[in-house]
Length: 70
Image 1 (cartoon, helix red, strand yellow):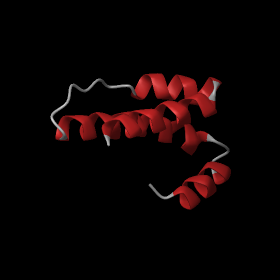
Image 2 (cartoon, rainbow, N blue to C red):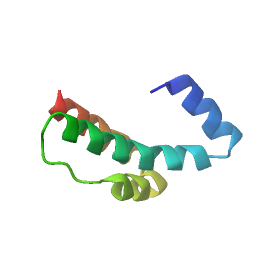
Image 3 (tube, rainbow, N blue to C red):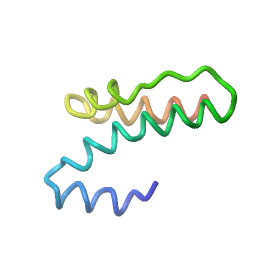
Image 4 (spheres, rainbow, N blue to C red):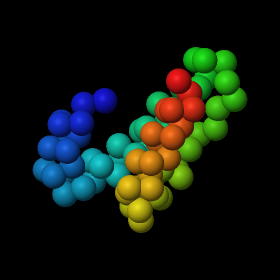
């Protein structure tokens, strides 16, 4: 994750990159859970919808899932 580049790309693409980023994080989260041998669900769609409607809620959920993983 490169936050600086993510912000710049979101600004340049008028927010489209940021929306795609939320979906990609759901896919990455699934791979991380599978790598640890835990039950994984694909939450990319949930993160995508929340990223459009409530971006801070999507960021909170991503961080919460990472905290539980580690």
